[in-house]
Image (cartoon, rainbow, N blue to C red; front, top):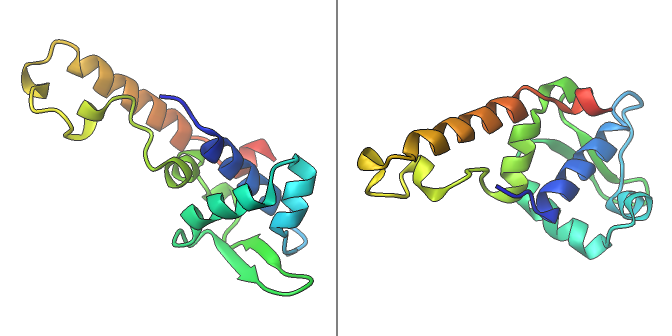
Length: 130
């Protein structure tokens, strides 16, 4: 499994938006773009993945942007990366992508590795990295 820039930048977006949580402040993608030195167009593209996630409250206008809908402790890193990346499976066979899984000598290894990674990422929250 390799986390792409979509996953890494998606997590940065979430952390930057979370930085305004205590002040109940909206954080714009332009602010994040400038702070993180990431193309605004690319951040906008990444945000499309989060559109249906129920993670943010958004506001338009000069003081608009995004803020977290819930407390940072309520956002698992695993969930954020799954939304940004699509999935975090180490192999396709782990979730029904292989018809030979029942007879595969290495299936248990991939299944266990996938579970270990998922459990680790799901044990971490935004709050842990603020």
